[in-house]
Amino acid sequence: MKKKVKVEEAVGMVLAHDITEVDLEKNFKGRAFKKGHIIREEDIEKLKKLGKEFIYVLELSEEEIHEDEAAKVLADALMGENLYRDPEPSEGKVNIYSEVFGVVKIDVERLIEFNMVGEPSCPTIHTNMWVKPGQKVAAVRIISLTAPKKEVEEAVKIAQGGIIRVVPFQEKKGGMIITGNEVYKGRIKDKFYDKLKPKLEFFKCKVEEKVILPDQEERIREKIEEFTDKYDIVVLTGGTSVDPDDVTYRAIKKAGAENFIRGNPIQPGNMLTMGWVKGKPVVAVPAAALFFKATAFDIWLPRLLIGDVITKREVAEKAHGGLCHNCPVCVFPICPFGRP
View 1 (spheres, rainbow, N blue to C red):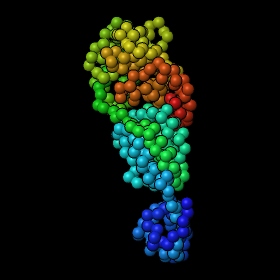
View 2: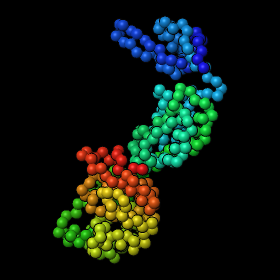
View 3: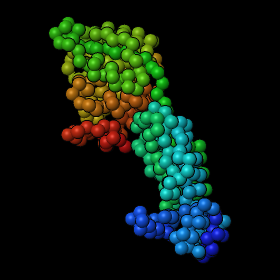
View 4: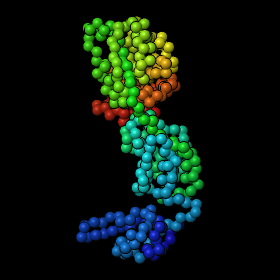
């Protein structure tokens, strides 16, 4: 409800309208105080200089909450591990940021429920995107200048315990197995190692060992089992297509891979194969990784390195959004490729 009060009596009250300032000496005309501003003691003298002996303020009932207070309460409820927020709102909005280098996890169903309440609003980035420290992941506010407390309380209850969190990358060690008779016999030079090593190291995974093996299923299987004893992740290259001598995917399966997934509805990178041997992710990267900046490997790698076990259902869901647009300038991962 709007109420006209003397400026001296308005401290702590909420301004119900913008107040304009005109300064000819500075050639300035613009907003001096924004609608929704909470009036402070130090504002009184300036308001008087602007010719304001009386102003209109919002008088909040016990059932209402101001946008600034609501934004802080909602942000605190939404935040899980490894996040921080703006200390104070700006224009009624509080941003939420990652404290760490990691993968953002968002409970999408609860986020939708939160935004269905009414006044509370929280857009986020996509779940499972990797983020750097200080990167914004969400923004929180209410739609109006004030909101019913019961709506904010309902949204807080939905968000309680955190809807958003970030899982940090940890230092890990990897082993790489390059397969192919043509590489093993020196007919061609391997190009996978130089292409994939920086991708792993970017996410804090040091490639400790590399071997080159011929297309022999048993030898590849033995090396997979050896590497899964020693390293946190095993990356293989070559031997993933439908040619009879492409045996890499069979070697992974024979090594006892659980949750074995051959291929995925993502292009480029259709033939990517993965499974978990002794609890360690083992992933075979197809030749597409040599020719494209982003493939199925780039979509799954950050999650593999934080310990996620990818399900067949998740792989199938990537059919929607799994076709690369082949943009003239690739801006992956800030693009639709591989997103929900």
